[in-house]
Length: 405
Image: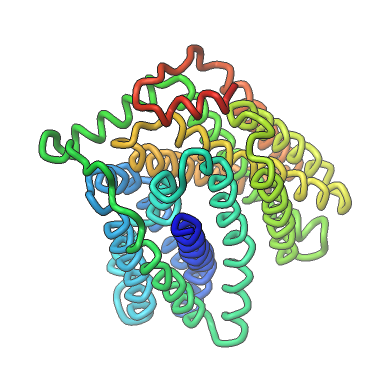
């Protein structure tokens, strides 16, 4: 009963924090534009936070792995992230833009706490046999946040103004602090902190990802797939404008994707051992390739269908990725592996979005077909990494291998 309460509290905290995070991006863009009148300056705020999140993930993960009470470190990171948003909001229009950007970068370094840093704590919340279902439920919090966050940002901005939307997003992240604080302590306590430096642990985590074929395969596939997702997302405003009658309707496509991803993960939560996660990773990439190709028709019905199909790929891909990381990562490197993976995916998404924007302006169908090609490349990458894992870190790992078979 206690574990059930702990899982419910963990998932509720994760969902609240991630909704605030998803809300913060569009809210910052709107608030920045309202205060400065410049779309370039507004987008630079979001860009600064995104780049910093990509850089900060490995270090944050290493610190979580070295902490005796990782939940308390996670709670501190959430509190500082929320405080950073509040400081940005207070400084907009008062402080010079370079100072605001510096604050955004500092806050963004803590961003991976809301994704990989939180997910890495699940094995201390549920028993090994409950981890597959917990993975699917955890992935659903991302889908719910992706659906609710932007909608909240738009609604609060319309009713109360863009600055209020930033304040609400910071408050949601802050509300998750108690749930993170109550996460279980590490048992047995971490013993590596006194013997090794943070740099040594960073190097050890990166080496483990590269040398573990199943983990390397899942990481490479997910990063390439996230690049394709970034390309598809960047094309949605133009798709809305040219196919659905308004750029704002592009957000509807993202909502369709979030809803279908949520539904797909709900099925996986009900039948967590229905398909092996290693198989699910490359089949999900193929589904995303088909969605991009369908969207390239640039007609209303196929386009909406493509958005729904994309969710069927995105949701299970995230669940399967979590399952592989939990199964393969040793306990003393789990936080770093999760946050490093999140950072690499953020980088891939940003790269895909930056490439697709100019390309979609010249040829919308061409950009979508390229996104599909990137997803095919992601599926092929799953077979490019040869070899198999060697179970070398405890009895819990064996359960994961049985699941994979």
